[in-house]
Amino acid sequence: MPLPPLIPRETPICRWWRNLRVAPPVGVWFAVLIAVNLVQTLSLVVKPLSPRAFRRFNRWLAETWWGGCVVFAERFNGQRIIVSGEDLPDDENALVVSNHQQMPDITTIMSVARSKGRLGDLKFFVKRALKWVPGVGWGMQFLNCPFLERDWTADRERIARTFDTLVHERIPMWLVSFVEGTRTTQRKVLASAVWAAERGLEPTRHVLIPRTKGFVASVEGLGDHLHAIYDLTIGYIDGVPSLWQHITGRVKEIHVHVRRFPVDELPELEAELAQWLRDRFYEKDALLERFYATGTFQAEPAPVRE
Image (cartoon, rainbow, N blue to C red; front, top):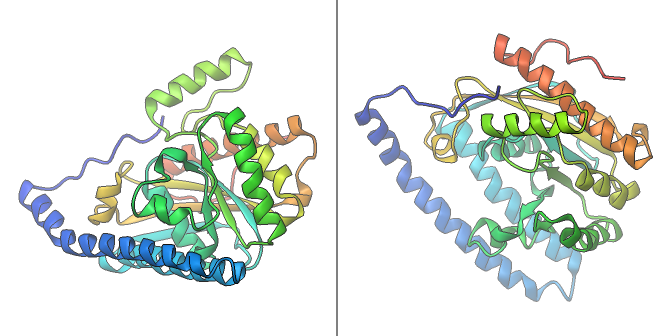
């Protein structure tokens, strides 16, 4: 089963001091984010004159602010991101699929992207409800992030427009998709197992059976603009941390296993592509089973399922 939430082993005084220690920099950093939103809004003046300059400027803003989040975690909090698996190239467009447990998954992916010089090219599938949230939601509107209703019929046309922009304007991207559709919990894994049994699918223990429609649409809609699929498996040691636990430095070590699949090696038929994604999550389930037993992804990855 998935790890339970992280329960810090510390006294109330230590917890109070830890929270007090990070409150000032977090407040300043959020104020900086609102200032970034204002600058992004002002950059709209440039867009009619030079869409490319508009995109490059907003890419730089995202890289700078997100980079600050990564540096804060790594240097101020002493957090280590331990990456295993395949080395990723620096210059290709990718669809990033990952297991999803909590918000620190996102900053972990940011750390991997930053190590390859692609932090500013991250784009996330985002819940439409977040679109108007000051800070993160406002900022993502300037980065060509797809906003979703979680209703495929309603989302299809909106996603197609976003893909059309990415493809025709040749926008560099690492497009992040949490294809499980929600955060993994023990309750949701049990529900996923029931859903799988009803459809004759093998159940999983540590991840959810992925939703395949959006993945298939992404591969097909991005066409030759997409070069590879990056399959990331994120593992925590003592429990799954909340965002605040991550910010306050309670998470000292996060593991990530990376696999790369060139798009030209993927199956072409929709049903086969959907099964390809499910197979990757069965492998991910086996990886996490071993990780929870050994505390590392360093061993050879699980064998590819036929």
